[in-house]
Length: 363
Ligand code: NAD
Image 1 (tube, rainbow, N blue to C red):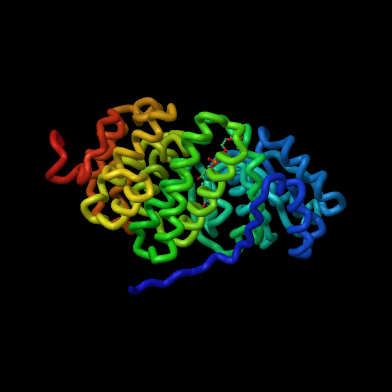
Image 2 (image 1 turned 90 degrees about the vertical axis):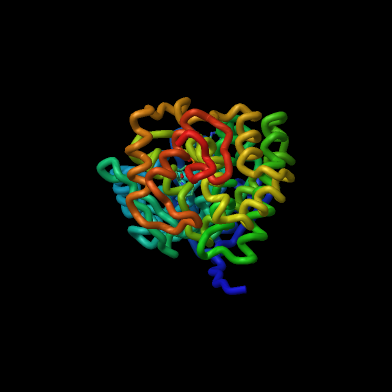
């Protein structure tokens, strides 16, 4: 064995009802007395309830979080945190609200408590993102890693089923790419296997009974493990492609992950047999890419990039962009190979292992 592993120092509290019963205690543990509570518009009621639970330790509520953290949204929130004299932030919501908390942490050093309401996993990573002039920049900085994460399955009971499914597959994508990352390790493999198993088992139960506390708890547990994989490793082709499709063509984040993942895994399969075997084992199948596609499709998720609004003429541009910079990936990323992957995902063809190579017909 040969690996290095950075344990991320976040504390996790996982309990039904924890958003309202544990967040104040987490703030106290961290010595924080003036917290700015952040959310998006739709999460405002939950954010206010969390703010109320903080009592005197709440310095204000800001519900201006937006997808992909536009720079002007971050500027406004930083100014608010400063004028409120905040000594920390509590982000209540999905990757967008947590992303805003991270942007504030990056600029001011203020510690962040995360109260996640989706399965994005951002709360377990030191990765920040900011969108300026239509381009999203990302980076890693330990200062943005939440100091404490409060997982409360009750907050996810009303997460709509379609969003639950795509957000859940988004989480699975973190685990899948962690399994073949250059900085993977035995611990990451354990987290990834258990994360994929938990999430894949939970999603059909969530779809069948969206308000089932048990199913929601299992999905959130899976999201935690998959998010930990994301925080510990370097992502490859799948995340790069989704970044291009979201950033350049405006495709929706979680849906894009859901459509692309089976094809990215199929593309990498010849170069990452152990990762494919681990995913197959977790899904109890002998066809990991096919099972991922089947799982999401059966639960009503989109199956093609065409459905998400991508135009056929954009495929070549997206392939060129994804292949234009070097990044870690088990199989070499060629423009032709990525184009074949994207075409298959555009049309929704079965994801064949080795896609874009000599075994993929018709390309
Ligand atoms: P999001 O936070 O924008 O939430 C998606 C939608 O779901 C929003 O409309 C939101 O209002 C709604 N929503 C959230 N929780 C809900 C709930 N419990 N009930 C009902 N509706 C709810 O999106 P997301 O998918 O959570 O995160 C995506 C964003 O996070 C992207 O910008 C992505 O790049 C980023 N991200 C970052 C990291 C990282 O490590 N930095 C990791 C994953 C995702």
